[in-house]
Length: 444
Ligand code: NDP
Image (cartoon, rainbow, N blue to C red; front, side, top):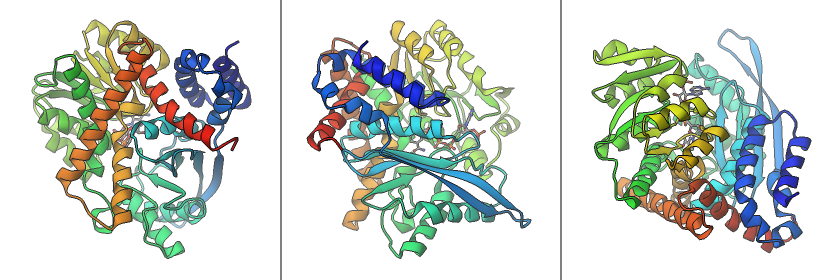
């Protein structure tokens, strides 16, 4: 049995019922196998056994009081996965589905993603099964304060720097930062995605979506093509989706559909993003509302069917496993050219294989959505220097990082005889830097 297969077997045995984590580990280790087999030094140093085991996992109680005075209890998580190349870095997710398995899959992916950015950031992830939807601002504030009252002792500007993710936007980051500052009496870059008036960076809000489109454009350019006049479907209508759609439109593409967990809207004339922003960012309402306001749009229940719409480019930007084998078959039959993962692991293993087998340009999340964490790295750099860079400066650096990530994964896929397999390219390139750092630091 190969070294990677042995480690994968241990992963499933030692972590039963962690399906999402098994899926992420399988994707990475399977594609790494030929590379690892050619380098026996990794097995000798136990690199994979160490890589799949988080350095630290923290699970804690988060009690909070609702507006009616009733006490609720949620579960908080922070998985500090790997600090070989820098302080742990990765977002916090607040969603009822959050479990240790989901946080571990996200933290594991984050190790390789952060490595690909070229910046010094280790991997971590956290969150809670708390649902901010339908809660008042005061309830969200009390929850965030309680969450940070435990988390503060585990994080720090040079130790572990969380950020946002699903359900954690500017409001939640603000409440958590305020509580951290109050407890520690330190105004430091312990969270990224902060507001612009207290240490945040321009472009952070747009970074993941813009970065996704920059790398998609670079990939198309490498095939002498562009996004101009392409029909694009973007799933979700949260932070990543909105700014991915914005950049697609700026580059001359047409976004015809967006969704939320309830369903999707299709607008053959192209989605009017100012209306989506008003519904989602201002009113925090449902995407179905778009069809009430735009005559040319139709709303359909069930978000998964969004992949039945014919498009040249598909950008899944909502959540894990939202694009399965049946959806991939539809997209391939409709001649999709490129699929770029804005979300983390939105494509199932079976669907990914179909895209690779059918020569669809497939950009995996750990490369394609790295723009968010890269810009968080730029936010940390500005905070350390007490400087504030212009929008143009940060955007230029973000674009440079995304172009560089594409060049890295493209070269790595070619160097390993796997032309255009960017899944393998990203996994191998991300792994090499982390493994080298781990081996230099001894068996720790
Ligand atoms: P948001 O909370 O801003 O938006 C999430 C969107 O996805 C919403 O439209 C939401 O709909 C939808 N969604 C959530 N859960 C489900 C579900 N189970 N089924 C269908 N749709 C769902 O999150 P982000 O935009 O920040 O994150 C989206 C994805 O991108 C996640 O996978 C995240 O990990 C990843 N990501 C985010 C980064 C960032 O900088 N924000 C960085 C890198 C990756 P509804 O409102 O109905 O729940």
